[in-house]
Length: 255
Image: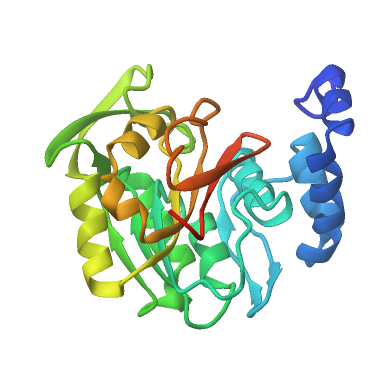
């Protein structure tokens, strides 16, 4: 065992291209790269801890609460699961967790605006703390995105990273939810176009993506979905790329 990771798991990661990219970016991204790497690779260190991260707008310092949050930081900032251009202006972040992906989008430039949706109460409090220096550049909705308006049953666990609608966790809560088409249509009416739609809802991604009205997809430039079986969901309007565990759809120039 290395930390809490098996040797087999560590060796498997060594031979993945995205692992080399994440390793290189760790030295460029973390103010203290050895601390970041030891936490990520070997689950060392105590929590909660402030993790200084270099961005195009300077250093941000999210507060992370466990090794599971450290995984998120590495996936977003070092592995660049949601890599996008620095010209983005409008982002919709469905499943915002504690705000790490929001920090990434908000720090691509000083004009990016992010709509955030996160239903789990413990995550909401942490998210607002991590985004306290970006007030005015985001709108936060403590609710789930689903296929209907009303309420949904959400399973969750202690880390806050893996909860979602339809998950098998024993602990359940009822959370408010909004229908995805209505939410996106309202944002498009205000902003005209969405540069990035990111969906991370722990197994509910494909259903949400499939429920997005096709006329709205023409106004969404790029979609990131953490789900391995979404290749054929957007075959008509977007080109598909698999980036590790992330499915990325880029809008075609011609329809």
